[in-house]
Image (cartoon, rainbow, N blue to C red; front, side):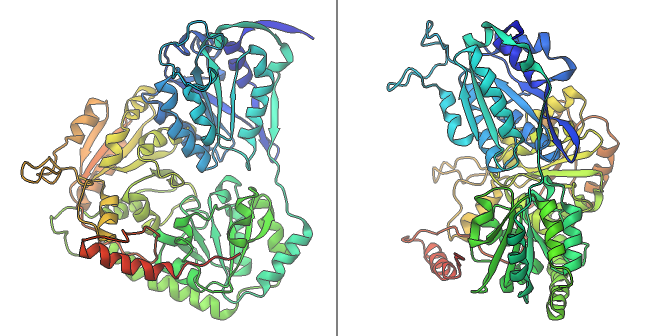
Length: 624
């Protein structure tokens, strides 16, 4: 066997350069670059190897926060439809644990990302090394063990030869659409720099095929028989539609059957709202049209979705007591949720053959009329929310107005990235897509701080797109550092900052649960009450963004917002548009979410909210 003398870190770098995935006969590079912040745990190992061996095959990107760089990698993978991702490296200690939140975000969203944290010495000679956690029950535990529950694959390389089996398995998991998520390979500081005789064929090109699996014919026939009995069917499209590249197949399936389509956060854009069968968002943040049809649906076809609580309105959305579910998914656990009849397979391929099995069948005419009525009924509340008519109590823009202006301004070549706070709920309900790729939501983990880093990841994956990070002041305060990275790389993004001087979404939820305002507004501490209920804080976000290198605009009304968006589009530099918005809302809800108010309280409004909650819980349904 021919070998080459090489360090472990250099072997990792050379191996990653030769990894590919292939779908439909087209090859895609699996690891497209590496983000990293260096410390003593990786600078002389993986850092040195990247400098010497990385080059254009594995370019290096310099983020400013470890959590943020994982978010960028996740957004990159999402934009690439899981056919490519980035690796992330950190030092031992806090650099590593800063990535844990990002790892959870990736795994929950079923998106591939490779994490390479430095680790304590395998030889233990200098122990306890700087930043080492001394665990009393074992000498073989480090902070990197925290990654185990949030990773789809986890390993620690205690000898150089172990990468020969660990790395191929890690790549297999990253490339598998059913198993994918965060993959963590912990690299002890000493092992990174050790040399060993590595087989030369370890660096040969490897291609991992992504098959388009199909369910058995008998299962398709049985599912078609169930659907043929339906009087009021509905299809719910999730992120799996996008990852499979199944939007065209879904449109065709809807048109030949007449089944209307509602979309989850990740599925937004799978069928546009302009389509006669497009009902828009479903569930807690759903439209009147989608939720009205969902309430009466007797057969629900779900494609590529985890059926999380926002989609099912905490299992209260589908009220027909005899409702049946048919699920198309590559993930064995997801395909069985809600007692669904399972069609385990690729979304695009399965929709095509499922449509053939239903040839000659269409929804009843009465259901088609109900769909049209629901779409028409949705127009009035949509206009009331997006164009309120009367100014807000403080004369600031409503957040829903900001969404309308941004929606009108964007086009097929734009992508709006959002993740947390009130924005995802509002935009999911109100956004009317221009293309399947103009809406990018991280709502599996709803991780505050994802937005700017995510926008950078989208831009890195598709530099020709006009990318907008849409976020609130709370998220901005958590993670704004990647503005610097975008400026550094010359990859222009536009940050639209909606400032309501609060964690506004949770403040509204707090009040909806009967609570009094506490701990969610950004206020000074009062000398009278001793609480944070004094005067509102004043934060100069524009000055902050300018100091990070961004070109800054301010908008105070719809006209100036459109002007700012126009000016930002003409800029080559990363921009921030600061928009002060009212904390008041004109948003309407068409569903319910299970957030229990206190069962015992001396506050009358909490007791009233609890009574309302106990009635709502009775609407939950379990289809098993």
